[in-house]
Length: 479
Image (cartoon, rainbow, N blue to C red; front, side):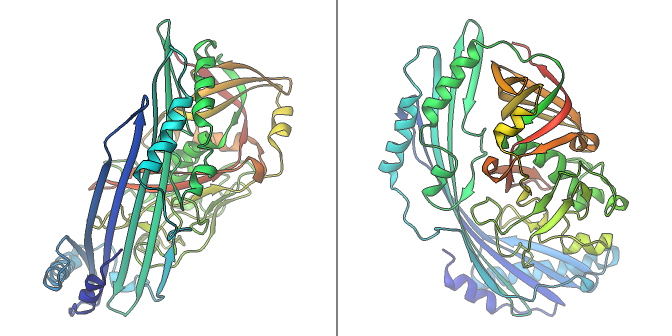
């Protein structure tokens, strides 16, 4: 919890800058793990500090500090103002024209105040699932873990705005690895780090943690005896835990406006999307509806205000397949003269916020899973990402999954291992031929999205139904 003395110290700050803001962050992490029925040491972290951002003339500057005393915060503000003045002559835009936050408020994760289990109870839960995955000599590793993160933020501005936000993230994880006859296979709970949600103990139910040990063990042993995924053009049914990565890499990153404007080219790459495409470019089939939705409370990147104090609201990025809006914060909106969203986000107190993904979701369609399968004559179902590769423009990609199952004449048939597929973002989404209903949708999230210089690793969320893509190039990996 943010110490009230730190926020009070913010009120004593003085500057002749045109505008300044203070963002204090206090984050605590604990991780419990059981590996092969043995409890691992408790891991804990704590990180706290403040970011000061100032506008002076046309320029902007920032400075971070872990000294939260009045003197420490004032020194950081003075440094930020000096940097703003120094940058004014070379600024791309006049920062005095950027929209400033005007609304105070607060936000809390769902069930933030409910009490979570203690260390012993967590280990008991994890040990149970770890044990359920055992019993066969071919299974060589079983890991069950849970990471809990508490993040408190207070945001103050020279205009008198105050925003308090308190987050609790719970990330259960389970993985089972088996080996036989020179072959190694792995099954996990939605993939590594894909179960990061906001809330309390109910997150375990949301992601299906109960019973996941036995399910993963059964499936990994089936994969050991399965043939490689066949190669060729097939219809592709992607389940939500793979759709998550597909959305992330070939919609989320390409639509970040700073990337479109060229800011990331020398580090994380640019985008095949150009500013002139918005409003008419056919990004996908008419079934594709993609939203920026920070209002879905359990999702990893739900929040009330972004890290520049802008209040959130749900916006369509792609509607009926047509590209409508980029992921651009107030600064990028000013540069590009385009509308954006409230997605100014920083990974820590010692990073300035930039254009970032948040909750990027595909809106559900009308078909049940059985109906989608019934419409496929020659296809493959894939779930749970295991590998990814995409070019610097976020266009050409190749993804691999943990689990595959053939679909023949409207029925699920043989399980196959090492299923992979490849495509081009600019055409792949146009092959979208079926979108599952709300019953097929899953809410997932990851804390591992990387971007920025200096590097920032941040939490994002993706909710998606199951989806079918027509005539996709699929292939099996080598043993």
